[in-house]
Length: 457
Ligand code: DMJ
Image (cartoon, rainbow, N blue to C red; front, side, top):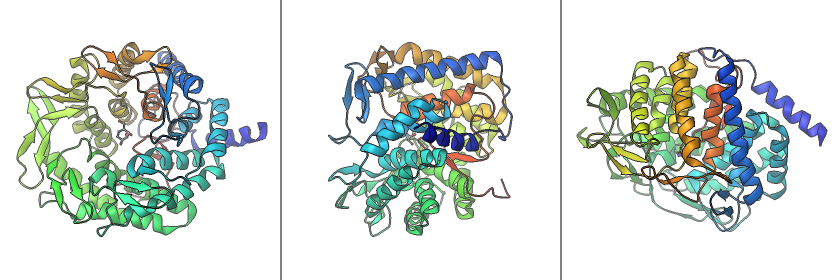
């Protein structure tokens, strides 16, 4: 066991040290104290999971019980949280988690699963933890999972069905969306690690299939039919169902140096920057337009949209990123913690839930890392104080059913441990904790090692 642990540590240290990101982050005593506080709160949430839900998909933080997505566990929280444990240096906990996964996780089950969620959380988590530890059991699990998921792409267009049965390969769900068809990071990485090119080919075909259906304005819509390839909803924006499509166009270039992805990102991001901004008072928000006409069809911004400033910063659009981040923080402050959606013209909360989402923290971290501006650490400290104040429970962290009343819900999604705490930690962690020149984070914040360093960056 001790030998395994030191092997794990050696791999982690090989991948993580040495900051070579755009702006070195100075480490000061206060930041170190914040990083320690974040780690302590992460440990509190992890201990709650271990005590009340070990071996299950997720903790129920109010009733102190467990939730399994499909009636039986696929270890969503253990897989999603493993690389955060490693990054925070919690090696004993990581080792116990890794052994649970290696011992218990099997995908040979007659279960119909949501393709997108399983790819970003489980496939992404297994690949990231494999690269951090070198433990080949994780890669074998990822390869087995990938093989079982591939039938999802067996539609006439190559766009993936929404659900796939892990044992039979039966598929269901024809109305899907751009985000759920953009899975090139996980499948491309799996192809590179296994040598099985079909993973990359299927995912690339799907990504291309979305891009080729863009309107003359360069925009995609919110839903399509995977069999006919027709749009069924033409609203275009950066929020739910489209968000990680944009993210993966850029990150595919960044991770693999893929020039086709770069070209798709360049034209898509230019269209987005032309089409979505709406000025209200002194703030710039990004709302909804029709993909064909460009007409404004909505003025909602929400917790998912708050990832976009980070992506803009990462791709070099710093002034636009700063402006949109400012709006996201205003939204957070409307009720003291962000709602799921907010109508920025009516100044009205339109969906009051807060499922512990990470996106605004993610953007705050990218902006800090890429500009070095201490403002973003100050914002992060403010967000963290509210997050702890309203969401902490005795057994972990709880979603809010209403940000106005701060009523808690019996739910702690695995992404809290994969993403929210990881981004808070990275914001305050010592220089060198995660090397953005060496890794790209998938949409669930699982770091994947860059294959090559492209010349043009
Ligand atoms: C995560 O599962 C991923 O970040 C996904 O892309 C969108 N939403 C959740 C977190 O909010």
